[in-house]
View 1 (spheres, rainbow, N blue to C red):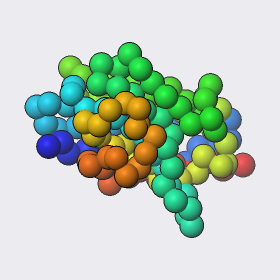
View 2: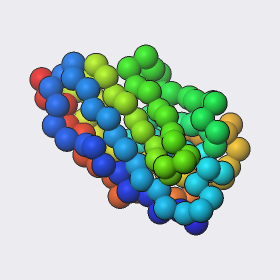
View 3: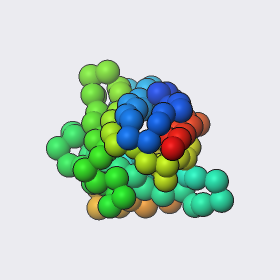
Length: 125
């Protein structure tokens, strides 16, 4: 089992940057596939980025490709999301998630068993 806590959200102007962090507890953190998801008001939770257990494989939603970078540090039990060139449409609550499913399912919300509480990201014009 793993517990996840996000941090790093806040208010930023369009074009700015933020780095989200996700602190994980649990001895088997390095065996989990990890993902970042987001949910805007009135919308369903959507996939943002995912990374496999070792960090060698990543995947991004088309809407963030080239702007966001996901990374992990298994020695520190940390997951990160570097967000650059932020747009107003990036405004949402961002969640980190973990699961031991195959990486081919990294984009599917329903495949994740463990979730953080979320951190708000607001991008102003």
